Image 1 (cartoon, rainbow, N blue to C red):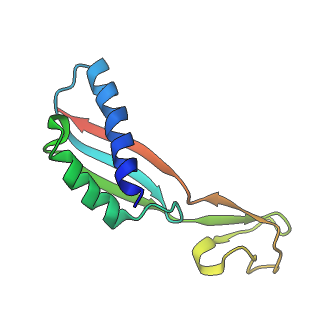
Image 2 (image 1 turned 30 degrees about the vertical axis):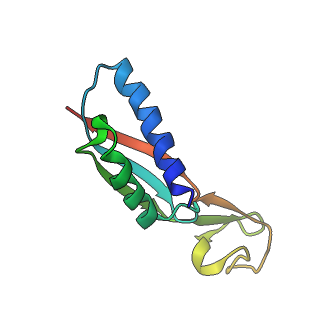
Image 3 (image 1 turned 60 degrees about the horizontal axis):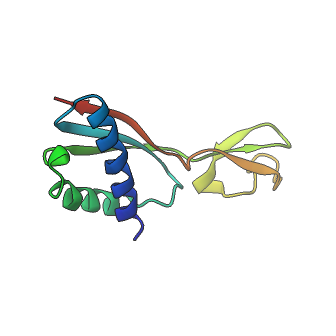
Length: 114
């Protein structure tokens, strides 16, 4: 489960930012998580709850995850389509010349502080 390492990375980054801005409490963290990012949201939430109890800055912090849909672009026909439903082969022209346009993101979108 790499989600615990991901949570530690997020918290370490936010602790640094909080110290630079004299923030003592973070109440909410909003993440953008791509549909095919390999991070499992339920594991991420469980790891967050466990780790937040161990760090005072996050003791009351809620983790909100916004899922970004995976979208693939076809080089041949220039169309986009839902990646999870159709995979690598374009449903419009059956071309394998495609690439992931969106959906593997993992970003801190915003934080709410006191």
